[in-house]
Length: 437
Image (tube, rainbow, N blue to C red; front, side):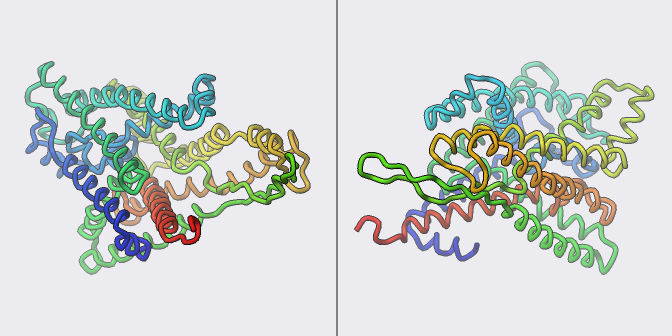
């Protein structure tokens, strides 16, 4: 990995792309520390020191924003509205024929879907920004803080509108920065923004574990967490790279005097086909009951049950539901993102077949069978990885933003592997000789 970056810096055009990407990252992190107009920065810092980050969707969104959400900065919403918009449009592609037709049109259709994603991102940013400002004004953003109600001193409509517009504009700027990295940088801009947001919280989270440790002034706990982190990274790399390769043979076809086809290839089916999406879905769904109780202020029996069993991340009911939801959404997302019948039809159309399997419906049934079998270990792996912060909460007293577990490690490793592959592919293109000679 380090060798790939060293070779990239020796190549002039790749060096310019890397330096451009680093400049965008600096701008992004700078914006994550500029507070929104109308916010009392002093009171926010007081509440940040007193508050304990709870689990759930709020913690997840704060992680995706690089800690900017709870500090209420201009990039407070971060990349989360764009991620949500992309997931929504991907799900709608299955049920809306117009979007499905655009997806099949190739580059022009994908450009149109990207434009729809931008519009939906701005709409979601307005919605989420309004919710964040309302939560900050009511004082429920930092529960238990003495000055939580004084975070927004001026609660006029004009001030509220300025705060929402600023956060929405910040989200649009983040989206633009990500597209700049994709076009003029090393590529994969949105994923790199997500990577930087999560990685920014690593040093603080590790140092908090050291400060809270009791053995050898906290260094024993710190070293243990680092060793566990290295093991987790190795495990995630191993599973993320694992795939089932289904062989495909293409028959020879004679067109005029030329022979086409006759090649062998394979269909790569990853063990973790769904990626990190099931974890995001499960966290969002599990946070809804707590959100309803928080805004309703109810003290009835069901509200007490929710606060006792669903809000604490180490509660038995919370752990069981979280794990089951991740397994369910892993199968759900794989079912809508990979269509065995469509793959089988495309293979049949171009003369491809799986050795020993008839083309058409038997091929679709075989692909579905294999996909279901490899999704089981993938979903169980996702559930166990997502529960690592809960185990860290019990073992080290860490918060839900434990650096080496759950959503963070999946995204960090996934984006890191993808970025290294892109850099290596660009290096191979520039060092390839004989292609144009």
